[in-house]
Length: 42
Length: 136
Image 1 (cartoon, rainbow over the protein chains, first blue to last red):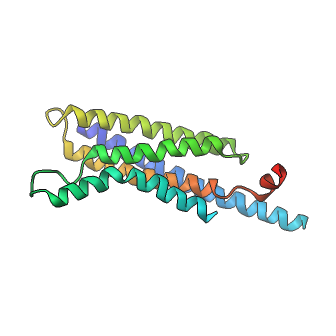
Image 2 (image 1 turned 135 degrees about the horizontal axis):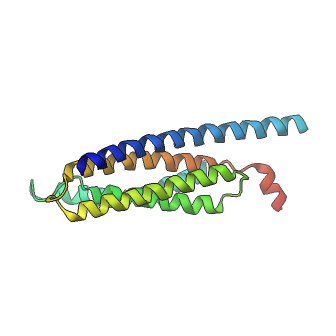
Image 3 (image 1 turned 90 degrees about the horizontal axis):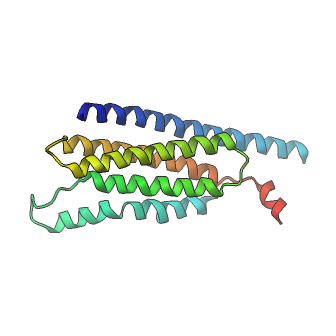
């Protein structure tokens, strides 16, 4: 039982870290794209 | 932009840390061995506070990023479900499960929850200027 919980925790933690990194990168990319659009329209 | 993250740090992270800090203070003033310094339930509470506030922020986020919202809501719900399992196992007691392992699982997951919550507030605090201008 303990092993199952530990394995599930590791998998969930890895998925969580991947999603957090993806979210931060995606946010920065979107922010940069918006900035470039605004710069071009000025 | 910075204001939103400061508010998150004080109103969400600090409030979520109250059980951990309270236990530390009680542990500090009591006799040695009378109380455990680390408890899984405190870290579960911290994680739950972070993910519930994430869901609330995502609900009110006005940026047009449907996929991002779905992924973040999904991971928050998954974490809440898993924290519930950890809490239930912690309540069942040492006869059935290794409490130390559950405590370390809860600590690890709460650190990941903090990183996820930071990623949500990082996005929420960067609402495009155009969407604010359109409202005015």
